[in-house]
Image (tube, rainbow, N blue to C red; front, side):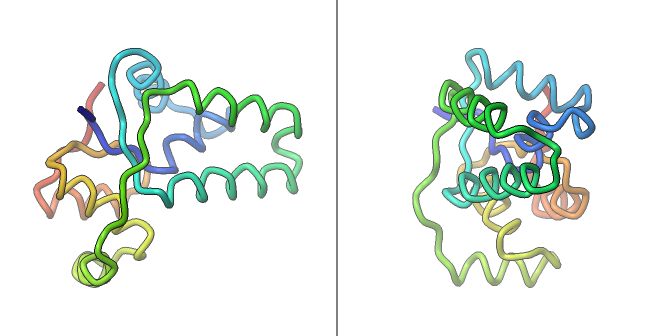
Length: 136
């Protein structure tokens, strides 16, 4: 059973050294061991888009991006099934989020799981919705 919802900001920070923090490292350590994370399917697209932009901007090499993607497959992370698009829209509207960020919040609310994120607006919305912020 999953123990937390993880958003793309956390995983992107694992990839780019200038984005790493003690918090992102601790989340990585947790997910690399026995803590199972869950994310909406959108997460896989967001991570790959982040890598692609990093490649185009020279922030990461192609071999390093391929190694990073291979390493992600080793994590205890599951991608969640589809959410109600109308519920995502309502949640995004209610909390001033993008529909993309609302997907993470919706999953955390639906599964009663804490959220790991670096996105300040998403963290505020999570707290307003009664979602705990993951503390490794």
